[in-house]
Length: 297
Image (cartoon, rainbow, N blue to C red; front, side, top):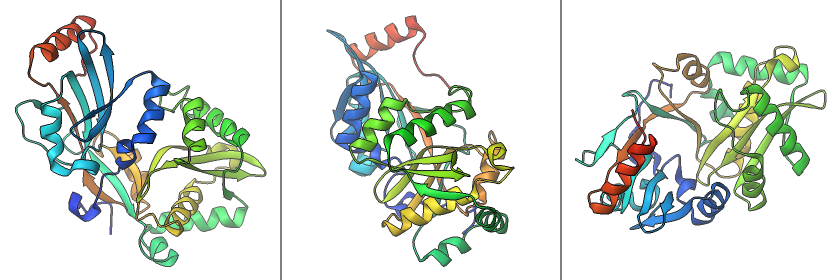
């Protein structure tokens, strides 16, 4: 398998965002962000609610993980001003506007098979980088205590300029999800100092929720060993795929090239804005427009 191989959603069997359809996981997220935990004919999401008017806007990830292709009908009938959806199933519907780049893909590494098979799927540059890091003493371990998560979060915030480069989940939310058993965290250490980490959620598909690695803190070593040890541990735990995240190769060529080193397949991904019919949804959209807060392309 190479990064150029595009697969059908049926070959994966679920959504990389399947955890975002788990009731307990979504309840924790909605409670933290003070959104309403919502459900529309089996599709779970979160919504901003205004008394008397109803849901102004909502967000949904991976609706196909629970109800398959029927998710589009469920959201088209929802009573919300607009619904922001991330999915791996394409939709043709008059109420749906696709606002994602045409080449947006989820990049998934196949974890099935033994460790030798998994390692062989990596490109040569990644295998070489893993061996170099092993020789030079980089260590990857699973996180064991809360203080280490605090340390990782501080590192991620520093690497992202306070979350400007890419979003870093709030530390309290990361603690809540881990304490509830929804997250596994892997840390890279260089001479006892935390220099990187990956925060993973998901069941059959391990979703890399957020990650970071500071090569400058360990003599320029690449972060390939962190990803290798994380994927190997997730494979040992029975996960079948590892989701490296969704991006547009044209818009993010450097990131796509870096992820290609791990031999992922491409699963088409889409972001839709759904604008249901009805008086209340129309009034909600009018209010969002006046506020300038309706999602745009």
